[in-house]
Image (cartoon, rainbow, N blue to C red; front, side):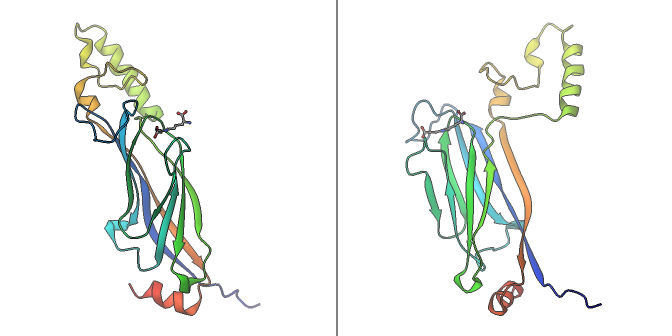
Length: 183
Ligand code: SLL
């Protein structure tokens, strides 16, 4: 009973976005309805180089963006934009030609607004119950989504949605295997 010989090599990577409300200093080209500045990135773990096996990254933004398909030919594989809404960003990672690998296709939900886990919501409710007896409701440290009367401190907060993942190459060809193992 022979074992099945399958060689797979995985490479960790990180992708996601950070976002921040646009404050009084607006980026020069931001249309007035844009409320946030955000950055999408695809990078190595601990900022390790990933360009030795990645040829380019193509990201497709929401159709409301001019030229929604953006090609990132060289690292850092990142894009900074402004906007007003969250949406699914399509990401295609293309590998170096010698790999003969198909591109990797996935989505990232661009996050602009903070969100809470059930635990955080629970502790927030306790906290707000406790503060209803105080006079100053500005003490609230929670984000009231959809309203713009949050404290200044909250407005400066950077929201981030970052994911750790691994790219798995199943039975890479010899040339590509050597490239993958070279670092
Ligand atoms: C929504 N489904 O309705 C989402 C779509 C689209 C976001 C969000 C900028 C567009 C531009 C922008 O933020 N689009 O460049 O004007 O919430």
